[in-house]
Image (cartoon, rainbow, N blue to C red):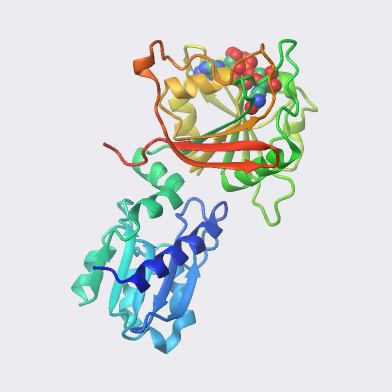
Length: 361
Ligand SMILES: NC(=O)c1ccc[n+]([C@@H]2O[C@H](COP(=O)([O-])OP(=O)(O)OC[C@H]3O[C@@H](n4cnc5c(N)ncnc54)[C@H](OP(=O)(O)O)[C@@H]3O)[C@@H](O)[C@H]2O)c1
């Protein structure tokens, strides 16, 4: 049974872990807190960037000799493999750690087995402390390992009556400046930002991160079957971030000369599963889908939306396109039901976050 001090340490380790969001891909985010027999923190750390030391290594370094006989509380099962850094399970054994408590087992076939190594070395191991919170913190990485495709967050902005544009098609600044700033934070946490050709034509979006200190820029992706929506001079073609245009296998070369990926066609445009597989192959573990309604419907129909973040403005339009179009749902019993994980005010707006279960059933 985990102690109260271990539970408190795990909460702190989770808070440390999420500081790495946006910086560790293709690795998970991980936090680690080392506590002594009295429950005092003697070392802590988190995985700050891919290629850098793992959380356990930071925490063990901070603890020094105090690690001997102490308990390491980690958000993810310590890894068992030698990658760019050594195996953490062995580092914990070498430091003299007596007990390891972790939240989520490592599903990565190359890294799993840390608990077995620890137990074989005589370390007391307990799994599953605050597991749901640990799953949520690492949702993007866990989805990408379990499903072999990036985790997808569909983000939209709408009026209280669910419109994303007015009857005349105007749609700029439905939500507040505060919500728009918040979207930049979301972008900074993802490896790629995706829009459809309709949004590209209507809005000429920029899609890079602005106003988030130290942010890593995501890959900007336009899903553009015929390769005609991104014109030379389009804002996505500036040098603020890399850009990829997804086109059909038989499309003519794109006029801008931008980087393209060629994909099979499907009903409505391109094959969404093939798009996600191509992004995964390029190292993308998390996608922010920024619309519009038609492309979002195709992602829903493909079973490729894991999380929805909706920004609702206290405004009414009465007419105009809805946030989601299509999706393959025809009757209420087929409604895609999600768990609301958060509802917060952002400036004058409401931000609602809802997720699908991350575990395979
Ligand atoms: N409020 C918001 O949150 C928000 C966000 C984004 C956009 N918008 C607004 O939404 C409007 C644009 O939305 P939209 O629905 O017209 O366009 P969209 O969803 O951005 O793009 C749809 C297009 O994507 C291409 N596509 C490629 N593969 C597809 C597939 N498998 N399934 C479906 N489409 C696929 C198709 O065009 P091709 O055949 O040319 O490839 C399709 O017409 C604009 O007015 C924009 O301002 C609002």
